[in-house]
Length: 452
Image (cartoon, rainbow, N blue to C red; front, top):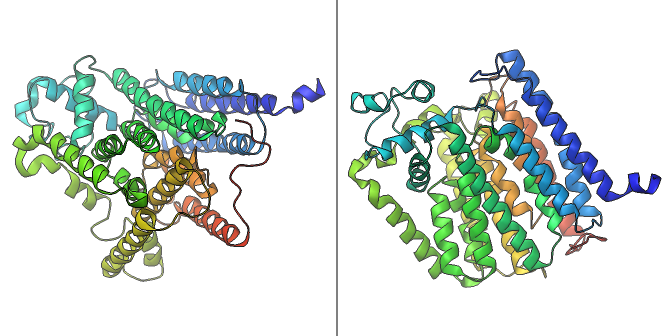
């Protein structure tokens, strides 16, 4: 019995059940039927409980990376991942109201209307209003939709079969499942342990972002996973097409494009990806300049036009250095840094003997993390996608940055630097530590004792 309790498979199951209990317990804090957690105090307690779930999650990640696990462990991982999502699916989206805009855009398109043409409060759309969705749409009085064409096509497809948030959440979980299946295929092709899928599947931030709130980022995750799989199987045109589609769900996935053209395989994925972007925009061009939606207004709301929305510039503001005066310098420096890294990845020599799939995901994860940190969005659901490439090429900073922003669900200090520093400072420390260890010791291809 003692040997059984000490076995890695038993510890994995115990950590999974602990994570399940934490998340179900956090769900119990929500006031039934409320469209928010219920109060500021409840929200703070809720995030505190969910953050506790990071402990069993990170311990489980450590376990799958360091211990030999039986093949059956994959079913434990997937089973608990499904149970956690099933527990949250029936709950109303109480951490964000974005999904109501998705449902609305789907209904607008089902009525044969371009979603970029009107704000929801426009009299032209009055006949589409209902009591369940319309009152909960954010920015309905002044903002056209911000979501790009690939996202709109998903909204339109779901709108043909469902008029509610549960149908939309199921669609998001379907795309998330596609991403996980793609990563499992990459792990198998590369001869890596399938248990590593836990890095994404048990991520508490992904769980709450998609199973509870149904954020459209799940579509980008599914398409990115498929793009990575196509690229590892040398389907360069298909990989470019899928990455182009992912970019027209959320802009951030474009950051990983240099990883797809590494070793000089440049033109096919780039040309096909660009063609997909153009084709996806064609059905919506009737809205004219409004086809860009609320993108400009969103940048102003988030403080990107003044610089106050960037974590580093907000920190310099505490030192008396005005973010507006530093904004151009920050953007130029960030752009040049990312451009230099992109060129090195796309055209430089391979670093070490890592298999192609590992090198691809390592480079994609690095580009994704640096771009996301440079933009430093303060919404938690912008970060779970970072743990997708970490499934194949695990890095401590990447795993932390893809899960710890669960803290961003609240901001008790109402400050764009101090509270986010709880996430960004440890991520920088972990990245610096990894770089130092990489310079002083050879990198092992697989942890010792890892089973496939």
